Length: 137
Image (cartoon, rainbow, N blue to C red; front, top):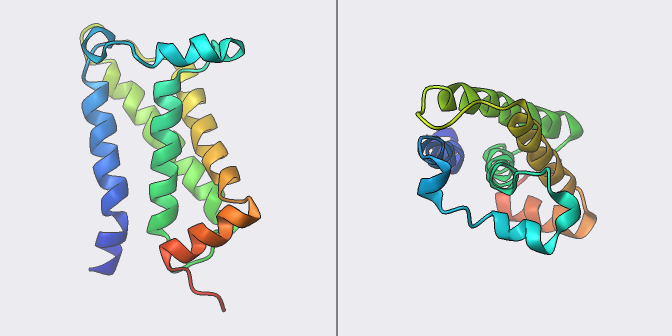
């Protein structure tokens, strides 16, 4: 039962991503484009994909709560997020007005990888490990 509870946030976030993938860009209003106005040198980055998979990777990392986040676990988290990004693009190919894009998968992977680098920062790592209940042996 504990593993189900640990993976529940990741599962719910994956449902949210699936729901948003079923909507067209017009339905979502394009508010993420406002980020590009403030950070023009990052025009090629799709902030929606980046943020969604940044958060997804944190929920996956939290799911592995009884373990410390080793580089192997971090790599597994990034790979799981990237794999889900591939399935997200396949899903988008069936949505009218949406098309799959390899650059979206790239943005998914960047978001997941930067989240894992973020939790590597010593002060953040300590708080994240404590928050997720990691056991130190």
